[in-house]
Length: 184
Image (cartoon, helix red, strand yellow):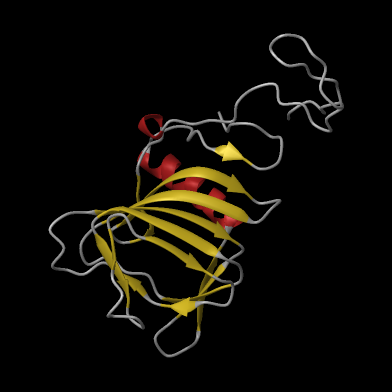
């Protein structure tokens, strides 16, 4: 449990006082992707993740996804906005086949977006994408029945269970609010 932070006066590097701040920052909240284990098949077969920030209090989750050719997710509905930066490879929404997302693409989805994600089987490399998700993805089966919910709480749970199952030990990621970096 992190100690409660009290308001305090901060100064510039030369010692000039700044206005009173509500929550002083005692350390940078930072993680290094090289120190986060790859959680294989954490979301679906071929969908591997490295969690960067899992914040159940704000309902936000930021993950780096490494996706094998042919990997796919079920049809899903987003309750909040999503931002995705594609770093490598190519992926597509089945509903928008003429708008593939390729290396360098930045996609913003407003809340309420509905789509089916997949990486084409003819991809010659893994796809790498950074996703910042607010709220939940409500997943459905092909027949329209409920499949599952994925949000910051379930992402945190999957991180813990998959890392334990793979024997990777604690996964460093930034936790919500002023809770710092997960080290346990």
